[in-house]
Image 1 (cartoon, rainbow, N blue to C red):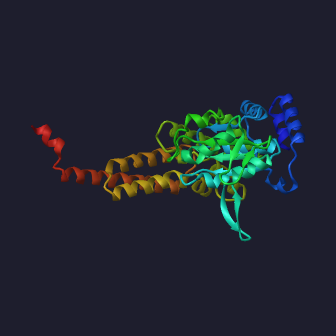
Image 2: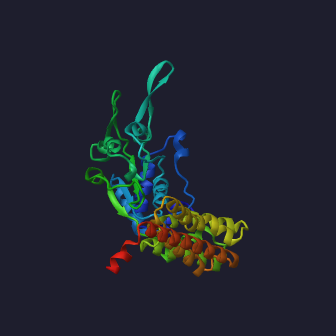
Image 3: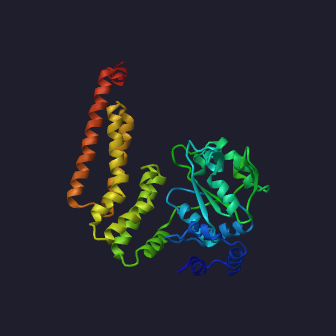
Length: 357
């Protein structure tokens, strides 16, 4: 099934699909850039969100996809590039991303100083779709250079070179998570240059549809077990009982792929889920203990307990593993309790003395 057939299957408006086909015919892609047109491995599921994105792009708007982790923002970005048949340039923002990495830098070629084009420059002149991944990780001085490209002017001034007018097919799509460390609120000037579309957390029905499409031959019982684990972890993360590191749809799909290949489900879960929940919490707890931070370490004991209870309740832990997990939680609890008593003893048990008076 090609991506336009998928839109039809999801019930996307026929008039929008006709407009997409017209867009593709109107803006051809150079032969040397056709390899940059994404071929998505899967399809984003969500008729309303797809229609909002498609309508915005047809109206020459830029799109900002926001929402929690594991909601398909990157997949949707890739799908949109493929839907419109445009070459794609990706920029993953981080704290060191600067304007030069977006627009371009001077370089020495054939005894001449020339501009080595950045992703935004290439996107601008070739009518591409520029994907700004985790745009709220960037420093403001890095993205302020994009303001004139993202608003009605649709131009980029390249210092020392030229002013570029954006190709009429050029669009920019940003993605962002609020809960990651290092992220921040985007300034109003930048946000106003996008249509903001909130991607909700995956519900059970949608997750089942995604996994069914990805693994049509996998045993139904195993599939439901994985879905249950994911939904439980997602709920615990929303309630603050565990961190969002546990909410990893990519990891779950990877684990199911290994099961399909013949790996034992318990071992697959170790790679795809346990290693990103219990193991990480245990290591963090031990680090905090070494630094004498008893109360924060106790918080990680609780996180380990929550993670184990979720996996155990869904039958994702074998008999021998269960005993091992319980032993590890007990060991952490014992060490934290001993350290707490020692710490209070060194302080002379101040609350006990106050009670005696």
